[in-house]
Length: 500
Ligand SMILES: Nc1ncnc2c1ncn2[C@@H]1O[C@H](COP(=O)(O)OP(=O)(O)OP(=O)(O)O)[C@@H](O)[C@H]1O
Ligand SMILES: [Mg+2]
Image 1 (spheres, rainbow, N blue to C red):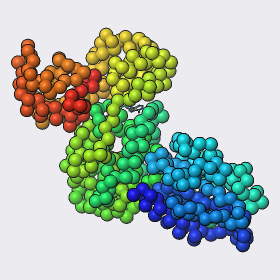
Image 2 (image 1 turned 90 degrees about the horizontal axis):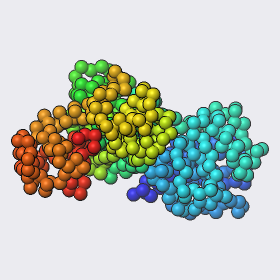
Image 3 (image 1 turned 135 degrees about the horizontal axis):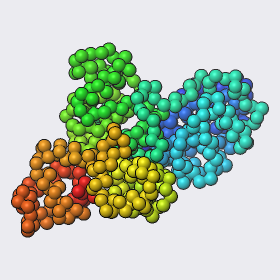
Image 4 (image 1 turned 90 degrees about the vertical axis):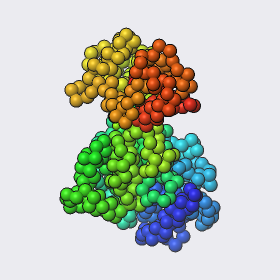
């Protein structure tokens, strides 16, 4: 499927290239033959680069379908390939390279945004044009091609005199319509998750829906919203619209959608259903878009407000684990706590206390939960203390610190994060609270169903039913799992150490 998409994309690029305006000085027999390759998602960059190159004299720009062998270059001169490197490469790889091989002599890589260099590119030359405006990007591109002997200086067009590459617009650097906040400068890790998210959007594997949706789920404070922000910034140039909607209540959900509708030129409409219908129509007419429903709390609410439009992406963040009906099972991504190394980095960088041993202890005591780690950073800074001292404080009175410390008036103590979720879960099944208490008493690291079924001696009276009634136990486990308060793996349920 991938090669079909790629072939279609590059063919499209090839068609567009034929229409490009060539340099007026182009001679009958070009001395340099160039191909531009890119993923379909990067076609605007591919077209722009090809258009730039076509402005040089004595240069012929060709495009080959990705899986075809390149035609022999005229006059036996080498065929240079210009490859576009972007975050898309990270998720899709590049079958172009399987075909060409990383022949550094013949391959020039133009990196258009921040992304790692894939190992298969080995020692290929990389020209970075991300973050540059059009004139600077084009000047650098020409400069590098001359330095590598691909183009001759005398064949270059007068770049400063050219407002745009042969009429081909410089690709946009981000969405035209957005309410996305700035990226968090302190964000660490999550690379694989962000890439998995992108890959899921690109290959939803569910062709029946025009919108491709992914749900990012996990316990409170584990970093779902931060992940969504990071993803949106990282891939922002692929979208014409990125819109953030707080979806924890129907009213905020509707208000967020109404604000987007207004931006898209939909007049104010009191009738919510009409407004959504109009918004769907407006979105169908727009370019690629990403809507983020943050902290969504109800499948039904989202279903009622679900957008539509070919190529639209919906990202849901939620403590609820079950999004069946709206999001395919494989598109539900669970966010785990941070890795040990990233937790240590967050603590050391945030506090300025370069004590990895103490940071490791604090990270372990806090279960590497990002929310708790950021509170730890705030505590150490505000109290002008050290990670080692804070670690000892946690060892003595973890609960006290988590329930009492507020980094600022508007930020609740860490422990409050789950109280609310527990209360919501308990509204649906009061036994969930009892089950949590049971766990806290008996086996905080993990409790198997069998243990509860056998019955446990000396339990307080109100905990006996949930410990001895296997069905009640299962239902309570399901509720806790639904609210991401526990994790179920290999038949055993596990409670995060801070939720106990
Ligand atoms: N990868 C990360 N690097 C650095 N800080 C992070 C990271 N992930 C989360 N944080 C910090 O942890 C805190 C909680 O993160 P976030 O709000 O994203 O969690 P959440 O899962 O969305 O929580 P909730 O369920 O309450 O909405 C924030 O202060 C955020 O800045
Ligand atoms: Mg959140």
